[in-house]
Length: 115
Length: 138
Image (cartoon, rainbow over all chains, first blue to last red; front, top):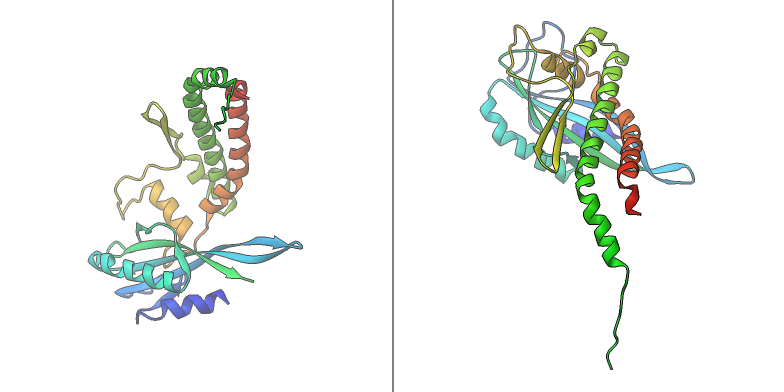
């Protein structure tokens, strides 16, 4: 299952991992953490009207209160995702968060699953 | 023993290509502009369909068409970004937070929805534009 594969990779860094949007209104942000959201899935390579592949589209976001950590952590995360067959589209991009002291780096990612 | 190959008819084809070359630039520009219009419409629709207040969609500015060189046109769709003010975020950042979510806000995902819906319409419109302008090239 895609979530198991995703957790396997994201839980290797000893920082919290959350579903995007799941933190409570008054819940403080950890120093560094990752969120994810499965945006879409699409069937591909059809045979007899059944897809033989599924493309999962996932947004993975690394949030930190120290923007300097991004330049080291993101290449490592991209590489680890790649080793585990998650393909990051481009190299991602910066986003502010709803906490002024916290910034994020969004990695749009695709995982190709053989059905 | 050598073989001589004579091919005819290229001169007229080359003349047509040369005559159309000016039209190719304008065709490409028109494709970019019309694609941008389709995407803007689907972007606005997707914002509203995702449950966001229509006022954000209604504030979306007109597309910006930038002629980067005689044969390169860029069309910017959506809200200009600018700098981030956490006390008064601009529409660009509101849209970004709602589309991608934040740790406290669930993503609405209206950008990929808009792109998916716009793609076949843009393809059909581009085909129409190219056939109209370059039809003589057949």
